[in-house]
Length: 498
Ligand code: NAD
Image (spheres, rainbow, N blue to C red):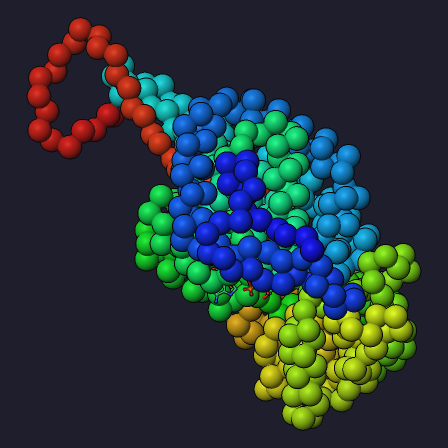
């Protein structure tokens, strides 16, 4: 049985809690490993290791750190299949989808390799007589990341390259449900020449997270996960005086206008609704066709395609989606569908009780299509995080916009249309952080930043990109005068340089 241990200062350790949690292959339902569950003692050790590493890492030149990012890029590229396999073995997503995750992580490493220019300061000469001012960005110290199960490699790598390229050292608390990817990342960092202790991994659950949030020497916390935990992490972390960015859950709508290319829209909904079994924070979970005719035509196109989804383990090259993460997730998603049906939604394609030959104990939910969903239904209000697409019919465009703007989440959204006017109005008025026009999953590239609005984010900064440089550094402004021999005596009025 594979035992997944913490990695602190480059050393694997089982820690002192004595607690472990089972790790599964979601396609077979078999336990494949156990992860050690840390707590305060392990977080204390990891922070000590990160503090020790910070003293030299923070004064390593940005150019040298950049070269290590370039090396990391090479190492990740060379081992991309292995990374994707590690993801799929515990998460269940298809191999191609795992490779896609690696590609998006590589983009962040590329951006981090430009850190010397991202950290460039500002300089103003002669702000006063013989006085110059320079503004620079300095690292914070030890920072931490707490990450979800659905992107076990990409989300840690949204954080780590930017945090350490900025000169910080890092403690990662990955998801306990698919923890092996985090340990593989440490292997890759080491191969790229990044010194031990710059990044440390402590596995665990709530007690481990609480130890991160309360630790006085952790300066900042990046969190990605569900909204209730994001809010908790933000509140407790801020109360402990930390800088916190906490990205939460989502309910992403796609408006389909009457003039849209419906084949294009149906393709988009299939990929964005069911890719990765709907376990993406940018998955489209609500289709909002405008007008009854658009809705009828769209549903007619979607129904046979959802019913024909190819579902299988990651080893099946033909599979379009895999299992969900755990038996609990499967049961929860099935209950959400039950509730939708009870509340009056029409179950056009029913993914409950899917069994796959040879994989009878896997955590399967088939593609599910619900029509006639209304905004008072729980299936609409709550994030399901599974392969369930709801169709909510809107009479006209403004009703669709108002619906999205009224939802508590504001992570991603899209409009499919050929009308530039409607698209422009949509991008302007929609209360959502990441918006697509004929693009169903508008995840920003790594040189922009990622982040939703409303209860999809807590804290001021998006993740990766330019916002990450601001999040992981603090501004220092140095005002300098070299004595010129002119003495103006003591001044008791507030200094003015004019
Ligand atoms: P989760 O909130 O259950 O777990 C996230 C992290 O929090 C994990 O490391 C977990 O160990 C920890 N955690 C869980 N319960 C906790 C508790 N009670 N106290 C303290 N820490 C706790 O999320 P998940 O199920 O792993 O991931 C899916 C969720 O993440 C979805 O809601 C999805 O929308 C969201 N997500 C958001 C984004 C984004 O960028 N906005 C990206 C990916 C996933």
